[in-house]
Length: 264
Ligand code: KIV
Image 1 (cartoon, helix red, strand yellow):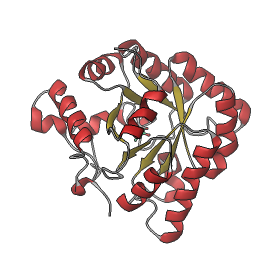
Image 2 (tube, protein in one colour):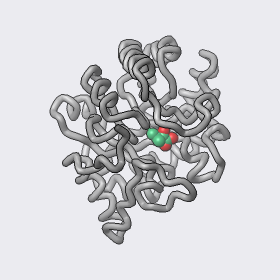
Image 3 (cartoon, helix red, strand yellow):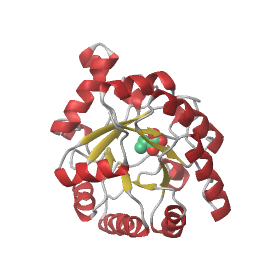
Image 4 (tube, protein in one colour):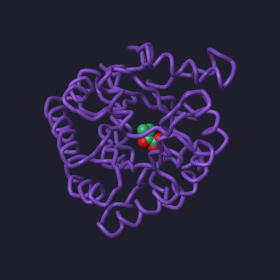
């Protein structure tokens, strides 16, 4: 199979094909995911919680993400890899360039950063310098201390309009993809329809162009609070390979996420 590129994602959106993506952090799972048909993977700063055991993503460094990105790249040479710019690694232009360079050199195809309109200039500077960008809106975990917890976003009229406006600004600034986390389905639909670029949802209903799950949530081995949008595909299948195939099929058909995994 040929390498997956951002153009594929844009074609998938245009054709209405709903695509499944996963977080990946290591060689072995990346290889297994790629073999089962996952063509887009995120080396997410969720690794601060899932791998490192922290309570939030704030402890994660660029070096951590680069280390895991290199391992995932070895396991999935043809996948499109998104790597998270972690907390405070894109606070100044110099820092942003250095952080993005480290992740791209490790094997990422694009970087993801969390936030709205205030990131417009950062996104423009990165894309002008040949670093493709994925935006991340809604529940952005790096802002947990501002939000006062991991809460659904975009609940009232003002927040809805702000998120829609943010999404349009990110697209206009050059972002090629958006991750939309924990927002009501009606808002996810508005954003997905308003944007030309693909929207990947998590806790945003089955109306987005693609889905992403933290891999541990897909296998039911998340410790502590289990998010409403999580589904244990291992429970229904009994083996990891089959769980991944079910996840892909359920995303493609829109069966997952169901109403019970979504916010109204
Ligand atoms: O860090 C991560 O894994 C993420 C996903 C939850 C989208 O950002």
